[in-house]
Length: 146
Image 1 (cartoon, rainbow, N blue to C red):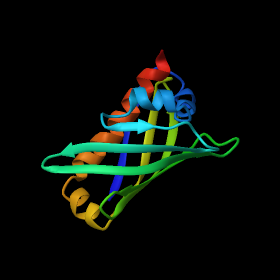
Image 2 (image 1 turned 90 degrees about the vertical axis):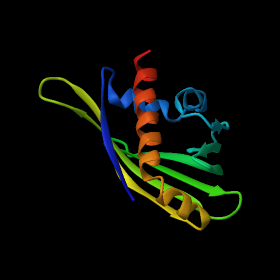
Image 3 (image 1 turned 135 degrees about the vertical axis):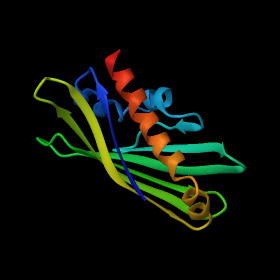
Image 4 (image 1 turned 30 degrees about the horizontal axis):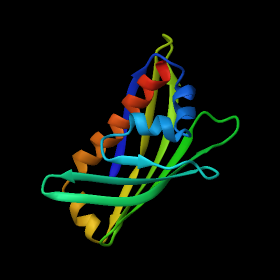
């Protein structure tokens, strides 16, 4: 499943991307259900527990952020396994943009793949996955403005 979107921001988008490395910030901005651990190298472990309709998602995984020196674009990898089998993989390329009028935008594009039992759950909830990612970036931009 493809995931893409963008949001306007008043802060430098690079500042927002930098905050993705801080588990305390992630804990403040993540949609309900996420708990984050302290980072190890470029990886932050998490658990996610949330009821979506009649289904209870109970995932454990990690987030890693790769940023190439001199390149504005970053890549976020999210890997999570469901406690009863299957899992989810999300890969996002995140790009900050500054328009000709000086307006700032943070955009993302990528894919989400689910396997096992989680695939059946997520397949029917594609809009929910999009909403979770958009909520994360909206809250990230607001946190960066503080």
